Amino acid sequence: MHPGILYATLAYTAWGLFPLYFRQLASVSALEVIAHRTLWSLVFVAVVLVARRQLGWIAPALRQPRLVGVFALSALLLAANWLVYVWAINAGHVLDASLGYFILPLLNVALGYAVLHERPRRGQWLAVGVAALGVLWLTVQAGQLPWIGLFIALTFCGYGLLRKMAPLGALHGLALETALLAPLAVGLLAWWAWLGQAAWPHAGVADALWLLSAGPVTAVPLLLFAAGARRIPLATMGLLQYIAPSLQFLSGIWLLGESVQPVRLVGFVLIWVALALFTLEGVWQHRAARVG
Image (tube, rainbow, N blue to C red; front, side):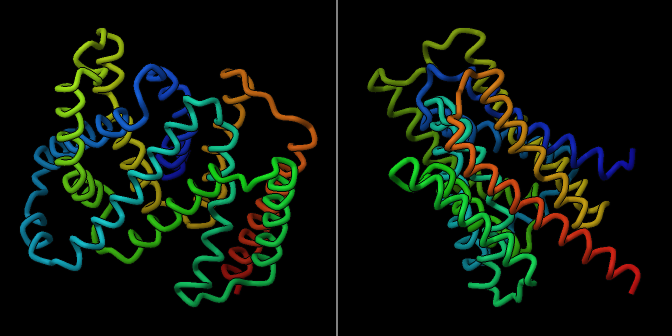
């Protein structure tokens, strides 16, 4: 297997199995899980940066208020995305969470048009339209917007947009984001412990290990993703990205006991059709560009 494809596949597979990991922490509040995830991610990436002797970027980055401001905003979007995602997993809404990552590529097209003034092709607009029909169908059936999926997609879409315009790579950017969030995370953990409301002082060995592993569980897939993205075409990455929500959807049904009503499944099918149109159009354009 091409190394880039292997790295990207491992990254998306890890993200797809996240529901199984976070379900192990169902006894811990989602906000406390995110505080631990932030803190131990910072510790892990700091160790990696020290081991790779990549600390020279820190001082120049901190001397740029605009850069720090952008990453402060991206950190807030990332934390909000993490929070709702973890809450959804442990509240039995894995399928709704997977919906967010199914519609994310199509939302990126719309955001690129609205913010970056990109010009999507007709096939891409068709895919966005079919996906919008799927969301409308889910809204009608539930009597409300599928807010979990939409929130997850919107926050990560905004996060991706900010990271696209920022000059730092995956590892350095995650280090800065978690460093900006760490004081809040440490403060919350200390406050909850003082009130006697924190899970971590009373956690058993298993729960403590699950919390501590949040660092590598968060950072390693990002490093694998960055390594894969540098080695393979964007069209290939576009195909592989559906591994994660597909695994989330399947694990929700087969392993975590969620059910989906046939009438509601119609909405998911419309979104899957949109993704198929989007992917096939992208592959066709990629091949046409190579031939040209």
